[in-house]
Image 1 (cartoon, rainbow, N blue to C red):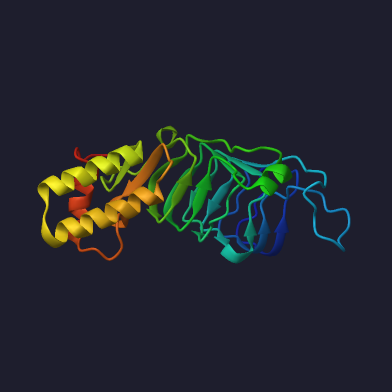
Image 2: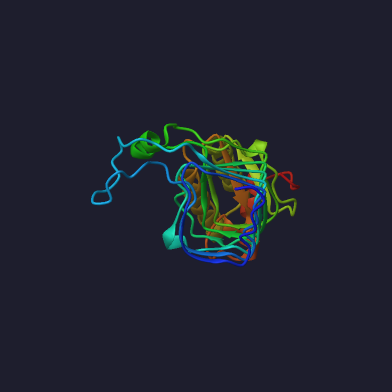
Length: 245
């Protein structure tokens, strides 16, 4: 499909398999049941697709536009898909927690992204067998115009992406070491309830990022329901030199 205008269409069912979409426009389109890239061939519709069934080639979306595009989180499946140079402009990216095998290269994201997970490695063994790889390419993506709300980046080189420059985001390298250093600074500079709350929040943060080489931090997500002054104390302990990541 090349330069096809899908804008404004309402899809009850949309499944792509081994397909390529080049410079297609999905602006204001709405999808109820969506499979971006069907990974395997279903020979017999009377049974589920087995892990050992043959695979389709990867579906690719290149320089496609998803502007205000609506996806149903409960019925959206990414499968074996790669997005290259695509624009996600206020697309309905909400509650997409299982994009385990989706690849993103040089894509641009604008507007809110809420409770989504992006993956650089595929840890689920069945998924690895279904798509035929254990890693995803994820590089050059531009989130500078995005508002990330509880968004996770698992096994991804954060330095290879572009992040918002508001000062509310920071990349923490070697999170375990940096968080432990922040705990020691807190014990040396704080006392009373502030010390207890800060150490508790940092301990939870350490558990969340255990074993990771990098972590993307957002100021207002360091701890839940904490007052603003405590959030800033946590931020100053973790990011001593404020500024864009």
